[in-house]
Image (spheres, rainbow over the protein chains, first blue to last red):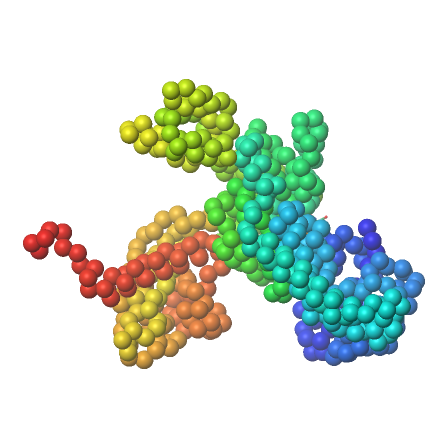
Length: 418
Length: 135
Ligand SMILES: Nc1nc2c(ncn2[C@@H]2O[C@H](COP(=O)(O)OP(=O)(O)OP(=O)(O)O)[C@@H](O)[C@H]2O)c(=O)[nH]1
Ligand SMILES: [Mg+2]
Protein backbone atom coordinates (compact mmCIF):
# COMPACT_ATOMS: atom_id res chain seq x y z
CA UNK A 1 0.00 0.00 0.00
CA UNK A 2 1.26 3.42 -0.89
CA UNK A 3 1.17 6.29 1.58
CA UNK A 4 -0.89 9.41 0.96
CA UNK A 5 -1.66 12.71 2.68
CA UNK A 6 -5.28 13.89 2.58
CA UNK A 7 -6.14 17.59 2.41
CA UNK A 8 -9.56 19.14 2.92
CA UNK A 9 -10.38 22.80 2.63
CA UNK A 10 -13.53 23.45 4.61
CA UNK A 11 -15.98 26.14 3.72
CA UNK A 12 -16.45 28.66 6.52
CA UNK A 13 -19.76 28.25 8.36
CA UNK A 14 -20.42 24.81 6.92
CA UNK A 15 -21.67 22.32 9.52
CA UNK A 16 -19.04 20.36 11.41
CA UNK A 17 -20.76 17.03 10.91
CA UNK A 18 -21.01 17.62 7.17
CA UNK A 19 -17.28 18.39 7.04
CA UNK A 20 -16.51 15.28 9.05
CA UNK A 21 -18.61 13.16 6.75
CA UNK A 22 -16.88 14.48 3.65
CA UNK A 23 -13.46 13.80 5.09
CA UNK A 24 -14.56 10.32 6.11
CA UNK A 25 -15.76 9.74 2.56
CA UNK A 26 -12.35 10.77 1.17
CA UNK A 27 -10.69 8.47 3.69
CA UNK A 28 -12.88 5.58 2.49
CA UNK A 29 -12.12 6.36 -1.13
CA UNK A 30 -8.38 6.42 -0.40
CA UNK A 31 -8.70 3.01 1.20
CA UNK A 32 -10.69 1.75 -1.75
CA UNK A 33 -7.88 3.03 -3.99
CA UNK A 34 -5.48 0.92 -1.95
CA UNK A 35 -3.75 3.85 -0.24
CA UNK A 36 -2.61 4.18 3.33
CA UNK A 37 -3.43 7.56 4.86
CA UNK A 38 -0.46 8.84 6.88
CA UNK A 39 -1.67 12.37 7.56
CA UNK A 40 -4.73 14.56 7.24
CA UNK A 41 -4.54 18.32 6.80
CA UNK A 42 -7.59 20.54 7.28
CA UNK A 43 -8.03 24.25 6.76
CA UNK A 44 -11.16 26.38 6.95
CA UNK A 45 -11.05 29.33 4.56
CA UNK A 46 -12.33 30.54 1.20
CA UNK A 47 -10.54 29.00 -1.77
CA UNK A 48 -7.22 30.35 -2.94
CA UNK A 49 -6.78 30.64 -6.70
CA UNK A 50 -3.19 29.56 -6.67
CA UNK A 51 -3.18 26.79 -4.08
CA UNK A 52 -6.81 26.01 -3.14
CA UNK A 53 -5.70 26.18 0.52
CA UNK A 54 -3.72 29.19 1.81
CA UNK A 55 -0.13 29.52 0.69
CA UNK A 56 1.13 29.14 4.25
CA UNK A 57 -0.89 25.95 4.69
CA UNK A 58 0.40 24.67 1.35
CA UNK A 59 3.97 25.19 2.61
CA UNK A 60 3.05 23.18 5.69
CA UNK A 61 1.84 20.37 3.45
CA UNK A 62 5.08 20.59 1.48
CA UNK A 63 7.08 20.11 4.68
CA UNK A 64 4.97 17.13 5.64
CA UNK A 65 5.50 15.70 2.19
CA UNK A 66 9.23 16.13 2.58
CA UNK A 67 9.31 14.20 5.84
CA UNK A 68 6.65 11.59 5.13
CA UNK A 69 7.46 10.98 1.47
CA UNK A 70 3.91 10.04 0.41
CA UNK A 71 3.21 8.71 -3.08
CA UNK A 72 0.44 11.26 -3.51
CA UNK A 73 -1.33 14.18 -1.92
CA UNK A 74 -5.11 13.93 -2.34
CA UNK A 75 -7.41 16.94 -2.06
CA UNK A 76 -11.07 16.65 -1.24
CA UNK A 77 -11.76 19.85 -3.17
CA UNK A 78 -11.66 19.88 -6.99
CA UNK A 79 -8.37 21.39 -8.18
CA UNK A 80 -7.77 23.62 -11.18
CA UNK A 81 -4.83 22.98 -13.45
CA UNK A 82 -3.01 25.97 -11.99
CA UNK A 83 -3.51 24.69 -8.47
CA UNK A 84 -2.30 21.19 -9.33
CA UNK A 85 0.73 22.69 -11.02
CA UNK A 86 1.59 25.05 -8.15
CA UNK A 87 1.01 22.48 -5.46
CA UNK A 88 3.01 19.74 -7.11
CA UNK A 89 5.88 22.16 -7.78
CA UNK A 90 5.88 23.20 -4.14
CA UNK A 91 5.44 19.76 -2.62
CA UNK A 92 7.60 17.88 -5.11
CA UNK A 93 4.96 15.19 -5.10
CA UNK A 94 2.02 14.15 -7.25
CA UNK A 95 -1.14 16.04 -6.30
CA UNK A 96 -4.63 14.85 -7.29
CA UNK A 97 -8.19 15.65 -6.30
CA UNK A 98 -11.13 13.46 -5.29
CA UNK A 99 -12.35 13.03 -8.88
CA UNK A 100 -9.01 11.80 -10.10
CA UNK A 101 -8.93 9.38 -7.19
CA UNK A 102 -12.35 8.07 -8.18
CA UNK A 103 -11.16 7.68 -11.77
CA UNK A 104 -8.17 5.67 -10.52
CA UNK A 105 -10.49 3.40 -8.56
CA UNK A 106 -12.79 2.87 -11.52
CA UNK A 107 -9.82 2.17 -13.78
CA UNK A 108 -8.52 -0.47 -11.41
CA UNK A 109 -11.89 -2.20 -11.20
CA UNK A 110 -13.08 -2.03 -14.78
CA UNK A 111 -13.21 -5.66 -15.79
CA UNK A 112 -14.53 -5.61 -19.31
CA UNK A 113 -13.22 -3.92 -22.43
CA UNK A 114 -16.32 -1.75 -22.59
CA UNK A 115 -16.03 -0.58 -19.03
CA UNK A 116 -12.35 0.17 -19.52
CA UNK A 117 -13.29 2.35 -22.48
CA UNK A 118 -15.95 4.13 -20.44
CA UNK A 119 -13.43 4.93 -17.75
CA UNK A 120 -10.88 6.15 -20.29
CA UNK A 121 -13.58 8.34 -21.81
CA UNK A 122 -14.37 9.89 -18.44
CA UNK A 123 -10.69 10.55 -17.88
CA UNK A 124 -10.32 12.26 -21.25
CA UNK A 125 -13.42 14.36 -20.72
CA UNK A 126 -12.00 15.44 -17.40
CA UNK A 127 -8.74 16.32 -19.12
CA UNK A 128 -10.04 18.11 -22.19
CA UNK A 129 -10.85 21.51 -20.71
CA UNK A 130 -7.51 21.37 -18.96
CA UNK A 131 -5.43 20.32 -21.93
CA UNK A 132 -4.80 23.80 -23.31
CA UNK A 133 -4.10 25.23 -19.87
CA UNK A 134 -1.57 22.52 -19.08
CA UNK A 135 0.42 23.23 -22.20
CA UNK A 136 0.42 26.97 -21.71
CA UNK A 137 1.57 26.58 -18.13
CA UNK A 138 4.41 24.38 -19.22
CA UNK A 139 5.36 26.87 -21.90
CA UNK A 140 5.25 29.80 -19.51
CA UNK A 141 7.70 28.05 -17.29
CA UNK A 142 9.81 27.16 -20.30
CA UNK A 143 10.09 23.67 -19.09
CA UNK A 144 12.70 21.86 -21.10
CA UNK A 145 11.39 19.53 -23.69
CA UNK A 146 8.17 21.33 -24.40
CA UNK A 147 9.20 24.56 -26.06
CA UNK A 148 11.02 22.78 -28.78
CA UNK A 149 8.02 20.76 -29.79
CA UNK A 150 6.49 23.41 -32.04
CA UNK A 151 2.91 22.59 -32.75
CA UNK A 152 2.54 20.62 -29.59
CA UNK A 153 0.12 23.07 -28.00
CA UNK A 154 -2.59 22.57 -30.56
CA UNK A 155 -1.91 18.96 -31.15
CA UNK A 156 -2.26 17.97 -27.50
CA UNK A 157 -5.81 19.27 -27.29
CA UNK A 158 -6.57 17.88 -30.74
CA UNK A 159 -5.19 14.56 -29.66
CA UNK A 160 -7.46 14.40 -26.62
CA UNK A 161 -10.45 15.32 -28.78
CA UNK A 162 -9.60 12.67 -31.32
CA UNK A 163 -9.29 10.00 -28.69
CA UNK A 164 -12.63 11.02 -27.22
CA UNK A 165 -14.44 10.73 -30.51
CA UNK A 166 -12.75 7.44 -31.34
CA UNK A 167 -13.85 5.89 -28.05
CA UNK A 168 -17.36 7.27 -28.39
CA UNK A 169 -17.64 5.77 -31.83
CA UNK A 170 -16.41 2.42 -30.65
CA UNK A 171 -18.80 2.44 -27.71
CA UNK A 172 -21.73 3.36 -29.92
CA UNK A 173 -21.18 0.47 -32.30
CA UNK A 174 -22.51 -1.44 -29.33
CA UNK A 175 -20.37 -4.54 -29.53
CA UNK A 176 -21.33 -6.35 -26.37
CA UNK A 177 -18.57 -8.00 -24.43
CA UNK A 178 -17.76 -11.48 -25.49
CA UNK A 179 -15.41 -11.69 -22.53
CA UNK A 180 -18.26 -10.89 -20.20
CA UNK A 181 -19.37 -13.20 -17.48
CA UNK A 182 -22.79 -13.59 -18.97
CA UNK A 183 -21.55 -15.64 -21.89
CA UNK A 184 -19.40 -17.67 -19.60
CA UNK A 185 -22.23 -18.32 -17.24
CA UNK A 186 -24.45 -19.54 -19.98
CA UNK A 187 -21.99 -21.91 -21.49
CA UNK A 188 -21.15 -23.46 -18.13
CA UNK A 189 -24.47 -23.16 -16.39
CA UNK A 190 -23.47 -20.97 -13.46
CA UNK A 191 -25.75 -18.54 -11.72
CA UNK A 192 -24.30 -15.12 -11.13
CA UNK A 193 -24.14 -13.43 -7.75
CA UNK A 194 -22.99 -9.85 -7.36
CA UNK A 195 -22.08 -7.86 -4.32
CA UNK A 196 -23.32 -4.27 -4.34
CA UNK A 197 -23.54 -1.38 -1.93
CA UNK A 198 -21.85 1.75 -0.78
CA UNK A 199 -18.14 2.00 -0.36
CA UNK A 200 -16.96 0.69 3.05
CA UNK A 201 -20.07 -1.44 3.59
CA UNK A 202 -17.89 -4.55 3.76
CA UNK A 203 -18.40 -6.08 0.32
CA UNK A 204 -14.81 -7.20 -0.16
CA UNK A 205 -14.61 -8.57 3.37
CA UNK A 206 -17.79 -10.56 2.81
CA UNK A 207 -16.45 -11.69 -0.56
CA UNK A 208 -13.28 -13.04 1.05
CA UNK A 209 -15.10 -14.66 3.97
CA UNK A 210 -17.51 -16.43 1.63
CA UNK A 211 -14.86 -17.50 -0.83
CA UNK A 212 -12.19 -18.53 1.69
CA UNK A 213 -14.13 -21.57 2.83
CA UNK A 214 -14.01 -22.73 -0.76
CA UNK A 215 -10.40 -22.02 -1.60
CA UNK A 216 -9.06 -25.52 -1.83
CA UNK A 217 -11.86 -26.83 -3.94
CA UNK A 218 -11.55 -23.89 -6.22
CA UNK A 219 -7.86 -24.35 -6.80
CA UNK A 220 -8.32 -27.97 -7.67
CA UNK A 221 -11.25 -27.62 -9.99
CA UNK A 222 -11.09 -24.28 -11.66
CA UNK A 223 -8.83 -21.69 -13.11
CA UNK A 224 -9.04 -18.24 -11.60
CA UNK A 225 -11.31 -15.90 -13.50
CA UNK A 226 -10.40 -12.43 -12.35
CA UNK A 227 -9.41 -11.00 -9.01
CA UNK A 228 -12.94 -9.86 -8.39
CA UNK A 229 -14.82 -12.99 -9.47
CA UNK A 230 -14.66 -16.38 -7.78
CA UNK A 231 -16.46 -19.67 -7.83
CA UNK A 232 -18.68 -20.13 -4.83
CA UNK A 233 -20.52 -23.27 -3.83
CA UNK A 234 -23.91 -22.52 -2.35
CA UNK A 235 -25.27 -25.65 -0.70
CA UNK A 236 -24.22 -27.79 -3.65
CA UNK A 237 -24.76 -25.42 -6.54
CA UNK A 238 -21.86 -23.65 -8.19
CA UNK A 239 -22.18 -19.94 -8.69
CA UNK A 240 -19.91 -17.07 -9.68
CA UNK A 241 -19.57 -14.35 -7.07
CA UNK A 242 -18.39 -10.91 -8.17
CA UNK A 243 -17.12 -8.11 -5.96
CA UNK A 244 -17.78 -4.61 -7.29
CA UNK A 245 -16.92 -0.98 -6.93
CA UNK A 246 -18.86 0.64 -4.13
CA UNK A 247 -21.47 3.27 -4.82
CA UNK A 248 -20.00 6.70 -4.18
CA UNK A 249 -21.89 9.73 -2.91
CA UNK A 250 -22.41 12.81 -5.10
CA UNK A 251 -20.72 11.59 -8.26
CA UNK A 252 -20.10 14.39 -10.74
CA UNK A 253 -21.86 14.07 -14.06
CA UNK A 254 -18.83 13.15 -16.14
CA UNK A 255 -18.18 10.13 -13.94
CA UNK A 256 -21.66 8.66 -14.01
CA UNK A 257 -21.30 6.58 -17.18
CA UNK A 258 -17.95 5.23 -16.10
CA UNK A 259 -19.48 4.29 -12.77
CA UNK A 260 -22.41 2.55 -14.45
CA UNK A 261 -20.07 0.58 -16.68
CA UNK A 262 -18.19 -0.75 -13.68
CA UNK A 263 -21.54 -2.01 -12.47
CA UNK A 264 -22.33 -3.95 -15.64
CA UNK A 265 -21.75 -7.21 -13.84
CA UNK A 266 -24.07 -6.23 -11.03
CA UNK A 267 -26.95 -5.61 -13.37
CA UNK A 268 -26.51 -8.92 -15.14
CA UNK A 269 -26.58 -10.97 -11.99
CA UNK A 270 -29.32 -13.40 -11.00
CA UNK A 271 -28.99 -12.35 -7.40
CA UNK A 272 -27.67 -9.13 -5.94
CA UNK A 273 -26.28 -9.11 -2.43
CA UNK A 274 -26.87 -5.58 -1.28
CA UNK A 275 -24.43 -5.03 1.56
CA UNK A 276 -25.33 -2.50 4.24
CA UNK A 277 -23.20 -1.21 7.11
CA UNK A 278 -25.74 -1.34 9.92
CA UNK A 279 -23.40 0.44 12.33
CA UNK A 280 -23.77 3.77 10.56
CA UNK A 281 -26.31 6.39 11.67
CA UNK A 282 -29.81 5.28 10.68
CA UNK A 283 -30.66 8.27 8.51
CA UNK A 284 -27.44 7.75 6.51
CA UNK A 285 -28.27 4.05 6.07
CA UNK A 286 -31.73 4.96 4.87
CA UNK A 287 -30.45 7.52 2.40
CA UNK A 288 -27.85 5.12 1.01
CA UNK A 289 -30.42 2.35 0.66
CA UNK A 290 -32.84 4.66 -1.12
CA UNK A 291 -30.15 5.66 -3.63
CA UNK A 292 -29.26 2.00 -4.18
CA UNK A 293 -32.90 1.23 -4.91
CA UNK A 294 -32.99 4.14 -7.34
CA UNK A 295 -29.94 2.83 -9.19
CA UNK A 296 -31.49 -0.65 -9.35
CA UNK A 297 -34.80 0.77 -10.52
CA UNK A 298 -33.13 2.41 -13.49
CA UNK A 299 -30.86 -0.46 -14.45
CA UNK A 300 -32.10 -3.75 -13.18
CA UNK A 301 -33.80 -6.36 -15.27
CA UNK A 302 -35.01 -9.07 -12.99
CA UNK A 303 -32.46 -9.90 -10.38
CA UNK A 304 -33.48 -10.81 -6.86
CA UNK A 305 -32.15 -8.53 -4.17
CA UNK A 306 -30.94 -9.99 -0.89
CA UNK A 307 -29.94 -7.47 1.76
CA UNK A 308 -26.89 -8.45 3.78
CA UNK A 309 -27.11 -6.43 6.98
CA UNK A 310 -23.40 -6.34 7.77
CA UNK A 311 -21.22 -5.37 10.76
CA UNK A 312 -23.83 -6.74 13.16
CA UNK A 313 -20.99 -7.46 15.57
CA UNK A 314 -20.72 -3.73 16.22
CA UNK A 315 -24.17 -3.37 17.77
CA UNK A 316 -26.00 -4.62 20.82
CA UNK A 317 -28.95 -6.89 19.98
CA UNK A 318 -31.62 -4.38 21.08
CA UNK A 319 -30.07 -1.59 19.04
CA UNK A 320 -29.78 -3.93 16.06
CA UNK A 321 -33.40 -4.99 16.10
CA UNK A 322 -34.71 -1.44 16.44
CA UNK A 323 -32.57 -0.39 13.47
CA UNK A 324 -33.75 -3.36 11.44
CA UNK A 325 -37.32 -2.28 11.99
CA UNK A 326 -36.75 1.25 10.80
CA UNK A 327 -35.02 0.20 7.57
CA UNK A 328 -37.12 -2.89 6.85
CA UNK A 329 -39.05 -1.27 4.00
CA UNK A 330 -35.79 -0.65 2.16
CA UNK A 331 -34.23 -4.03 2.88
CA UNK A 332 -35.72 -6.84 0.78
CA UNK A 333 -34.87 -10.37 1.98
CA UNK A 334 -32.78 -9.23 4.92
CA UNK A 335 -30.12 -11.40 6.56
CA UNK A 336 -28.07 -10.20 9.52
CA UNK A 337 -24.37 -11.05 9.07
CA UNK A 338 -20.91 -10.12 10.15
CA UNK A 339 -18.32 -10.55 7.46
CA UNK A 340 -15.73 -10.26 10.20
CA UNK A 341 -16.93 -12.94 12.62
CA UNK A 342 -18.71 -15.12 10.11
CA UNK A 343 -22.01 -14.78 11.93
CA UNK A 344 -25.08 -15.38 9.78
CA UNK A 345 -23.24 -16.74 6.75
CA UNK A 346 -25.05 -20.08 6.76
CA UNK A 347 -28.36 -18.30 6.83
CA UNK A 348 -27.16 -16.07 3.99
CA UNK A 349 -26.27 -19.12 1.92
CA UNK A 350 -29.65 -20.69 2.61
CA UNK A 351 -31.52 -17.65 1.43
CA UNK A 352 -29.29 -17.32 -1.65
CA UNK A 353 -29.93 -20.98 -2.41
CA UNK A 354 -33.68 -20.53 -2.16
CA UNK A 355 -33.54 -17.71 -4.73
CA UNK A 356 -31.24 -19.33 -7.28
CA UNK A 357 -33.03 -19.64 -10.59
CA UNK A 358 -34.46 -23.09 -11.01
CA UNK A 359 -32.82 -25.36 -13.58
CA UNK A 360 -34.49 -28.27 -15.34
CA UNK A 361 -33.12 -31.13 -17.40
CA UNK A 362 -35.32 -32.11 -20.31
CA UNK A 363 -35.49 -33.67 -23.75
CA UNK A 364 -36.58 -31.65 -26.71
CA UNK A 365 -37.65 -32.89 -30.13
CA UNK A 366 -37.88 -30.47 -33.02
CA UNK A 367 -38.55 -31.01 -36.74
CA UNK A 368 -35.71 -30.12 -39.14
CA UNK A 369 -36.25 -26.48 -40.08
CA UNK A 370 -34.60 -23.10 -40.04
CA UNK A 371 -36.56 -22.10 -37.00
CA UNK A 372 -35.48 -25.21 -35.14
CA UNK A 373 -31.86 -24.53 -35.99
CA UNK A 374 -32.03 -21.09 -34.43
CA UNK A 375 -33.70 -22.63 -31.41
CA UNK A 376 -30.76 -25.00 -31.11
CA UNK A 377 -28.24 -22.18 -31.08
CA UNK A 378 -30.41 -20.24 -28.65
CA UNK A 379 -30.34 -23.23 -26.28
CA UNK A 380 -26.58 -23.49 -26.59
CA UNK A 381 -26.44 -19.93 -25.37
CA UNK A 382 -29.01 -20.16 -22.63
CA UNK A 383 -28.31 -23.52 -21.09
CA UNK A 384 -26.17 -26.62 -21.02
CA UNK A 385 -26.67 -28.87 -24.03
CA UNK A 386 -25.72 -32.41 -23.03
CA UNK A 387 -26.32 -33.91 -26.46
CA UNK A 388 -27.85 -33.18 -29.86
CA UNK A 389 -28.86 -35.77 -32.42
CA UNK A 390 -29.64 -34.68 -35.92
CA UNK A 391 -31.78 -37.44 -37.37
CA UNK A 392 -35.18 -37.17 -38.98
CA UNK A 393 -35.87 -34.80 -36.10
CA UNK A 394 -33.49 -32.88 -33.89
CA UNK A 395 -33.40 -34.47 -30.44
CA UNK A 396 -31.68 -32.61 -27.65
CA UNK A 397 -30.86 -33.30 -24.02
CA UNK A 398 -30.77 -29.90 -22.36
CA UNK A 399 -30.46 -28.34 -18.93
CA UNK A 400 -31.66 -24.78 -18.51
CA UNK A 401 -33.48 -22.27 -16.36
CA UNK A 402 -37.18 -22.78 -15.82
CA UNK A 403 -38.25 -20.00 -18.14
CA UNK A 404 -36.01 -21.31 -20.92
CA UNK A 405 -37.53 -24.73 -20.38
CA UNK A 406 -41.04 -23.32 -20.72
CA UNK A 407 -40.20 -21.36 -23.86
CA UNK A 408 -38.50 -24.37 -25.43
CA UNK A 409 -41.45 -26.62 -24.66
CA UNK A 410 -44.00 -24.24 -26.14
CA UNK A 411 -41.84 -23.93 -29.25
CA UNK A 412 -41.67 -27.71 -29.51
CA UNK A 413 -45.46 -27.86 -29.35
CA UNK A 414 -45.95 -25.14 -31.94
CA UNK A 415 -43.45 -26.57 -34.44
CA UNK A 416 -44.71 -30.15 -34.17
CA UNK A 417 -48.27 -29.08 -35.02
CA UNK A 418 -47.22 -27.70 -38.36
CA UNK B 1 -45.58 -6.86 4.65
CA UNK B 2 -46.50 -3.21 4.25
CA UNK B 3 -49.58 -1.59 2.84
CA UNK B 4 -49.27 1.60 0.77
CA UNK B 5 -51.39 3.59 -1.65
CA UNK B 6 -49.43 4.43 -4.80
CA UNK B 7 -50.77 7.38 -6.79
CA UNK B 8 -50.16 8.84 -10.22
CA UNK B 9 -51.79 11.64 -12.23
CA UNK B 10 -51.86 11.75 -16.04
CA UNK B 11 -52.75 14.67 -18.31
CA UNK B 12 -51.31 17.67 -16.58
CA UNK B 13 -50.85 19.46 -19.89
CA UNK B 14 -53.31 21.59 -21.88
CA UNK B 15 -55.69 19.73 -24.16
CA UNK B 16 -58.08 21.83 -26.27
CA UNK B 17 -57.68 24.75 -23.87
CA UNK B 18 -58.51 22.62 -20.82
CA UNK B 19 -56.76 20.33 -18.43
CA UNK B 20 -58.18 16.82 -18.44
CA UNK B 21 -56.51 14.82 -15.73
CA UNK B 22 -56.92 11.30 -14.44
CA UNK B 23 -55.73 10.34 -11.00
CA UNK B 24 -55.21 6.64 -10.25
CA UNK B 25 -54.67 5.25 -6.76
CA UNK B 26 -53.61 1.67 -6.13
CA UNK B 27 -53.71 0.12 -2.69
CA UNK B 28 -51.12 -2.62 -2.48
CA UNK B 29 -49.01 -4.78 -0.19
CA UNK B 30 -45.29 -4.78 -0.68
CA UNK B 31 -42.56 -7.00 0.74
CA UNK B 32 -39.14 -8.27 -0.14
CA UNK B 33 -38.62 -5.86 -3.01
CA UNK B 34 -41.81 -6.92 -4.76
CA UNK B 35 -45.45 -5.98 -5.01
CA UNK B 36 -47.17 -8.90 -3.28
CA UNK B 37 -50.81 -8.07 -3.80
CA UNK B 38 -53.02 -5.39 -5.29
CA UNK B 39 -56.09 -4.85 -3.12
CA UNK B 40 -57.95 -2.02 -4.67
CA UNK B 41 -57.82 0.52 -7.50
CA UNK B 42 -59.57 3.90 -7.66
CA UNK B 43 -59.67 6.14 -10.72
CA UNK B 44 -61.04 9.69 -10.82
CA UNK B 45 -61.08 12.13 -13.75
CA UNK B 46 -60.69 15.87 -13.06
CA UNK B 47 -61.11 18.89 -15.28
CA UNK B 48 -59.77 22.43 -14.87
CA UNK B 49 -59.47 25.61 -16.98
CA UNK B 50 -56.21 26.58 -15.37
CA UNK B 51 -53.07 24.53 -14.86
CA UNK B 52 -53.21 22.62 -11.57
CA UNK B 53 -51.25 23.97 -8.62
CA UNK B 54 -49.86 22.06 -5.68
CA UNK B 55 -53.03 22.41 -3.61
CA UNK B 56 -55.06 21.11 -6.56
CA UNK B 57 -52.80 18.10 -6.87
CA UNK B 58 -53.19 17.40 -3.15
CA UNK B 59 -56.98 17.73 -3.49
CA UNK B 60 -57.15 15.40 -6.49
CA UNK B 61 -55.08 12.78 -4.69
CA UNK B 62 -57.08 12.99 -1.46
CA UNK B 63 -60.37 12.69 -3.28
CA UNK B 64 -59.14 9.71 -5.27
CA UNK B 65 -57.83 7.74 -2.29
CA UNK B 66 -60.99 8.39 -0.26
CA UNK B 67 -62.23 5.19 1.34
CA UNK B 68 -59.15 3.16 0.46
CA UNK B 69 -57.22 1.18 3.04
CA UNK B 70 -53.55 1.97 3.34
CA UNK B 71 -51.21 3.64 5.71
CA UNK B 72 -49.15 5.92 3.53
CA UNK B 73 -49.74 7.64 0.20
CA UNK B 74 -46.76 7.49 -2.15
CA UNK B 75 -46.37 9.67 -5.23
CA UNK B 76 -43.54 10.90 -7.44
CA UNK B 77 -41.76 14.06 -6.29
CA UNK B 78 -42.36 15.58 -9.74
CA UNK B 79 -46.12 15.27 -9.25
CA UNK B 80 -45.84 17.66 -6.28
CA UNK B 81 -43.72 20.21 -8.11
CA UNK B 82 -40.54 18.83 -6.61
CA UNK B 83 -41.21 20.43 -3.27
CA UNK B 84 -39.49 18.95 -0.25
CA UNK B 85 -41.02 15.86 1.31
CA UNK B 86 -41.89 17.38 4.71
CA UNK B 87 -43.78 20.19 3.02
CA UNK B 88 -45.80 17.79 0.87
CA UNK B 89 -46.45 15.56 3.85
CA UNK B 90 -47.77 18.51 5.85
CA UNK B 91 -50.32 19.31 3.14
CA UNK B 92 -52.01 15.91 3.34
CA UNK B 93 -54.32 14.72 6.07
CA UNK B 94 -53.06 11.18 5.60
CA UNK B 95 -49.35 10.46 5.82
CA UNK B 96 -47.51 11.07 2.56
CA UNK B 97 -44.06 10.30 1.18
CA UNK B 98 -42.01 10.11 -1.98
CA UNK B 99 -40.91 6.70 -3.26
CA UNK B 100 -37.68 5.29 -1.89
CA UNK B 101 -37.79 1.54 -2.36
CA UNK B 102 -37.97 -0.53 -5.52
CA UNK B 103 -41.40 -1.83 -4.57
CA UNK B 104 -42.78 1.65 -3.96
CA UNK B 105 -41.57 2.61 -7.44
CA UNK B 106 -43.20 -0.49 -8.88
CA UNK B 107 -46.45 0.57 -7.22
CA UNK B 108 -46.30 4.01 -8.79
CA UNK B 109 -45.52 2.47 -12.15
CA UNK B 110 -48.70 0.42 -11.90
CA UNK B 111 -50.70 3.53 -10.96
CA UNK B 112 -49.11 5.34 -13.88
CA UNK B 113 -50.17 2.71 -16.41
CA UNK B 114 -53.70 2.78 -15.02
CA UNK B 115 -54.09 6.56 -15.08
CA UNK B 116 -52.59 6.84 -18.54
CA UNK B 117 -54.68 4.15 -20.17
CA UNK B 118 -57.91 5.26 -18.49
CA UNK B 119 -57.29 8.79 -19.69
CA UNK B 120 -56.70 7.56 -23.23
CA UNK B 121 -59.88 5.58 -23.03
CA UNK B 122 -61.89 8.59 -21.87
CA UNK B 123 -60.45 10.96 -24.46
CA UNK B 124 -60.95 8.73 -27.47
CA UNK B 125 -64.65 8.43 -28.29
CA UNK B 126 -63.86 5.79 -30.88
CA UNK B 127 -62.72 3.51 -28.11
CA UNK B 128 -66.32 2.24 -27.80
CA UNK B 129 -66.10 -0.71 -30.14
CA UNK B 130 -69.31 -2.47 -31.16
CA UNK B 131 -69.22 -6.20 -30.50
CA UNK B 132 -71.67 -6.91 -33.29
CA UNK B 133 -72.16 -4.88 -36.46
CA UNK B 134 -75.85 -4.17 -35.72
CA UNK B 135 -75.17 -2.44 -32.39
N1 LIG C 1 -16.70 -4.74 12.67
C1 LIG C 1 -16.83 -5.13 11.40
N2 LIG C 1 -16.08 -4.55 10.45
C2 LIG C 1 -16.23 -4.95 9.18
C3 LIG C 1 -17.15 -5.97 8.82
N3 LIG C 1 -17.09 -6.14 7.49
C4 LIG C 1 -16.18 -5.26 7.03
N4 LIG C 1 -15.64 -4.54 8.04
C5 LIG C 1 -14.62 -3.48 7.93
O1 LIG C 1 -15.13 -2.43 7.13
C6 LIG C 1 -14.10 -1.85 6.33
C7 LIG C 1 -14.50 -1.85 4.87
O2 LIG C 1 -14.59 -3.16 4.40
P1 LIG C 1 -14.45 -3.54 2.85
O3 LIG C 1 -14.81 -4.96 2.74
O4 LIG C 1 -13.16 -3.12 2.30
O5 LIG C 1 -15.59 -2.62 2.24
P2 LIG C 1 -16.10 -2.55 0.71
O6 LIG C 1 -17.58 -2.53 0.74
O7 LIG C 1 -15.45 -3.60 -0.11
O8 LIG C 1 -15.61 -1.11 0.28
P3 LIG C 1 -15.24 -0.60 -1.22
O9 LIG C 1 -14.45 -1.64 -1.89
O10 LIG C 1 -14.49 0.66 -0.95
O11 LIG C 1 -16.51 -0.30 -1.91
C8 LIG C 1 -12.86 -2.67 6.60
O12 LIG C 1 -12.08 -1.97 7.54
C9 LIG C 1 -13.39 -3.96 7.21
O13 LIG C 1 -12.48 -4.54 8.10
C10 LIG C 1 -17.92 -6.58 9.86
O14 LIG C 1 -18.75 -7.48 9.66
N5 LIG C 1 -17.71 -6.11 11.12
MG1 LIG D 1 -14.21 -3.54 -1.81
